Length: 194
Image 1 (cartoon, rainbow, N blue to C red):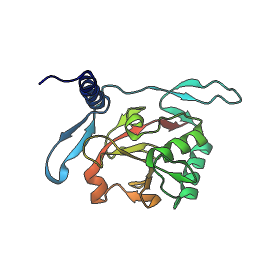
Image 2 (cartoon, rainbow, N blue to C red):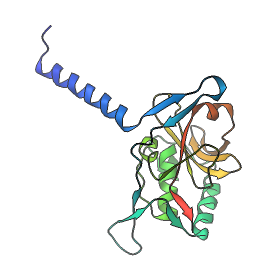
Image 3 (spheres, rainbow, N blue to C red):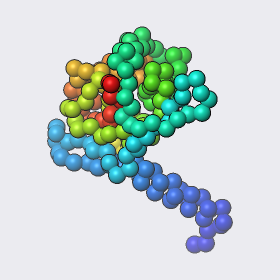
C-alpha cells in the first residue's frame, strides 16, 4: 500500500509525538496489589529555575531548591487557605479559576517569583526528587490519574495533606485517601526555608 506525502508526514509526526511523549515523562510501575506505586524517572531532573528579579525586568536563574524566608513560606500557606473553594477552570492560573498546575504556578510565582511551567508533567522533574513519606510542607506531590503519565499536582502542606485544584475547585485532601494513594507518582522539593 502506497501512502501519499500527507499521510506519510502525518504518520511520521504521530510517531515523533509518541516518542517525545514517552521520553519526556517516563513513569515506571513497580510492586503489586495495594502496595503498587508509581515512580517517576529521575533521569532528567532540572536543578535551576527562572525567577523574576526584584525590581528588574529580566528573569534570573536560581538553583533549586530555592531558599525562601520563613515569612514568604508562611504567606504561601496563608494564600492556600485564602484560595480554598476557588473555582476549577481548565488551563486556569488565576483566582478566577485554576487547574492543578496553574494553581501551583500562580502561588510559587506570587510568593517566590518562580516561573514554573504550566503542566504537571513539566513541573515534576523540577528540583530534588523526594522519597515517599519524606515530604515537607511546600513540596510538590504528583499523581498519575490517567495511568500513563504524570497529570496532576498538588502542594504538600503537612500532616499527610495536600492542597490542589480538583474538578470541584481548590481543596485539601489526604495523601492516604485510597484514591490518591493508588495514583501517587512522586514528590519534588523546589523550595527550602532558609
